[in-house]
Image (cartoon, rainbow, N blue to C red; front, side, top):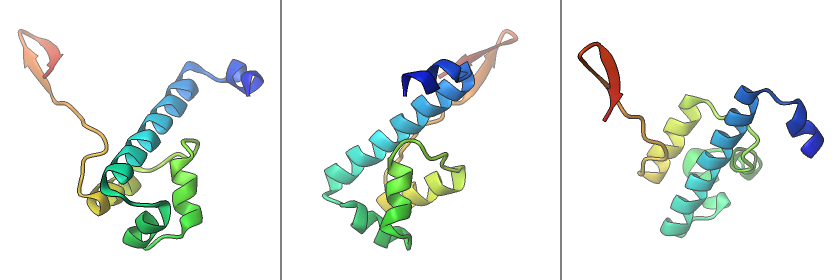
Length: 93
């Protein structure tokens, strides 16, 4: 795995980090709600294998998939902040 990481671009590394963070967040929500991968798969109309791939942190989930999971869990998985422009510069709020 270390050899693979050494050949990755910074963008690829960041994508992997984000994928793992999203998967970890989904696991946290599932644990809070007492759900298993089988339960989540059922809520989504997907197979356990597909859900397992998503939760491995190595699968590139689409925004549509994240939205479906968010809806099924009735909890935000990720938060996007808006930029507000002040005096010509963007700031996060």
